[in-house]
Image 1 (cartoon, rainbow, N blue to C red):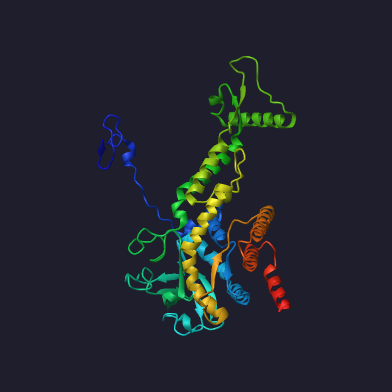
Image 2 (image 1 turned 60 degrees about the horizontal axis):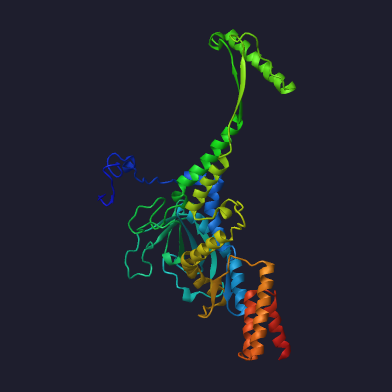
Length: 433
């Protein structure tokens, strides 16, 4: 029967006071900066959990859709500002500390006033700085649902390194959050001031700690893999005096020396009452590798990263390639790009494009480059099938040749199978005209 909205059984004791599990509760252990720094700097698994997602989300970066000269200018502006590297760093800090920020440096006046992006001209975005939650203090949270900055601080205070603070309007700060709070408006944060989130290591702490301790315990057993056990008659009385202890230590030091040099162990024999007995005990490590893999599997699941990516472990099993795990992981990263990274880049891009072009054309946009890259064989197979499809459509006469040629041209440019084909098309049109 059900009592108190849970399964209970008065016969077996499940869910009653006899059930020991009823005393279990979840307790929130808040990690401080010192422990987070120690985990990141000393534990390889913790560092990879923090870095891998941030790196993969920006690894292939993005593809701008615009005229070629506009794309070149935007990409040069990204390189000048180091946008890609700054985003990687901001994502890493957000996952490590629960939050981070990118400050937009411009040439306009009071940084405490809202940033007017419409007034930005060429080169108007002068720099981007990545800030940790310890360098940036958040003001009171904007709780007005009608405000464009709802849920964000009304202002930020940035420490300048000389003990002074500079108040900055939130429109000049791009905020990155690690693991969001259930209710960011009212929940007490883990680190720093309000409006940040939880460190990712806060969530995976137990799984990572268990994986690390299991490896250390197994490593500690390696010196005990083979133990020599010698039973010495009247040992207690021999050790009762210093002289007896020294004689016994010297005896077995020499015995071990002979064993090392000549592989001979000399022991006293004869009468069973005074004879020494020697035996070896070995630890069975047969199940240890599987146990370690299970701990790593749990840690990878907690971090939502496949073991093949997190640990570099080759897939096991007949015909196993790990492609399914990696594709699912890439789908998850793509969702992270669209849901988390794209809104933050939008605020930066409003300034970036104007700084590169002098204005913000509405028809310019970008797409994140796919993480799954085709092999040379796969690209050749796609090109062959595309050629067969185009030939079939041309022979059928269902699609006019001019339209078919334009569609094929766009497909070849987008697929990138033939390097430099877009400029080659442009050169051919120039020569033809």
